Each structure stands twice: as C-alpha cells, then as structure tokens.
Image (cartoon, one colour):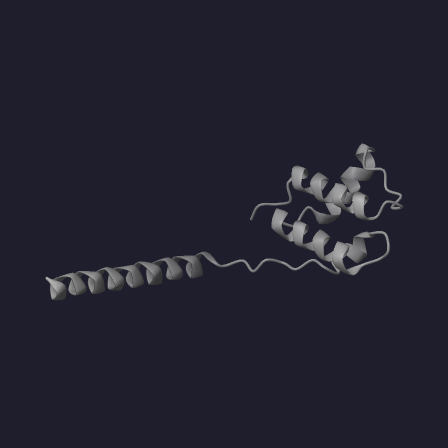
Length: 109
C-alpha cells in the first residue's frame, strides 16, 4: 500500500499552519519536518488528508501528533482474494446485462 508522499505531507502541514497561525512548529527545519513526517509515514495520502481536514473542522488548539492521530481513519484495505472475487462478480454482472440487451434487441426487431 502506498505510503504518505512527502508532497501531500507538506501540502497538508501548510494547511495546518494556515488555520492555526500561532502553531509554533518550524517546518523549514529538516529535522523538525522529518520527525513529524515519520510520525505519519504509515498513512496513505488520502488518510492524511482526511485526518488534517477533520482536525481543522473539529479542534481549536494547535496540532499535536496525538491530537491528529485521534482523527486517523484507516482506509479499509481489501485482500487480493476479495479484489479478484469482486472483479469476477462484476464481469458476470456485465455479461448478464449484455445478454439482457441482446434479448431486448431481438424482441423489438
């Protein structure tokens, strides 16, 4: 599963800086930015985006690692077998739809 991209991390951290202007975190420091990034490196881009948006909507205090992680909703990941089963079901459904369209064409002719 893809990990948090540094681009999405920077984008969302900048959002936090905009909405929490008194937040005293120096993201221009490589050490500070790196330590913050590693706290969320297991997030996907989508999970991190959602986490930050929820934090912005619901909180009034400057962000902390623990405060942000309260809003980490992990995307449900499907096992390969489940993905394959859903693909087969979709193909069968499409085949049935195509058969129905063929029958309808024959009836109207």
